[in-house]
Amino acid sequence: MEVLKPKKGVPVRVKEKVKGTEFKDVDENEDGKISPVELSVIIKNLTIKQFKEYDKNNDGYLDKSEFDTIWQGK
Picture 1 (cartoon, one colour):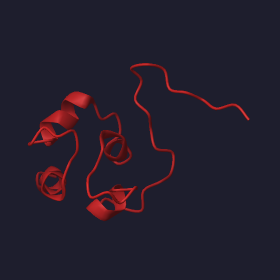
Picture 2 (cartoon, rainbow, N blue to C red; picture 1 turned 90 degrees about the horizontal axis):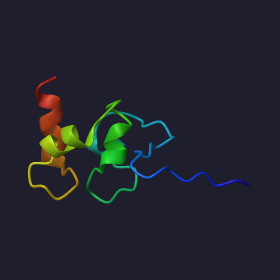
Picture 3 (cartoon, helix red, strand yellow; picture 1 turned 30 degrees about the horizontal axis):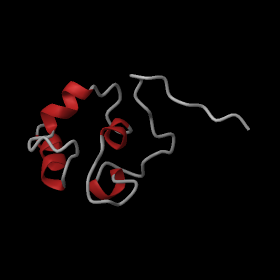
Picture 4 (cartoon, helix red, strand yellow; picture 1 turned 90 degrees about the vertical axis):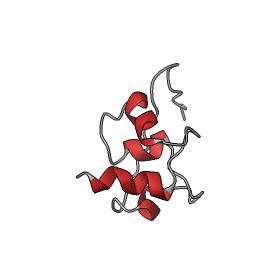
């Protein structure tokens, strides 16, 4: 079996479908935060720049409050 490794600088995508757009659905590993990879499953073509705009406390993840803010404007 060949293991595919991502090329440097290329985002990794989660291949499984997410059940919905609620925080608990997107938080695949159930760690209480959303990573850029997890968010890219529901926001296609998500850029790191966009993710950083959503990440108000600049910790590299979205908490539930930051995640909920994304959907308020939609």
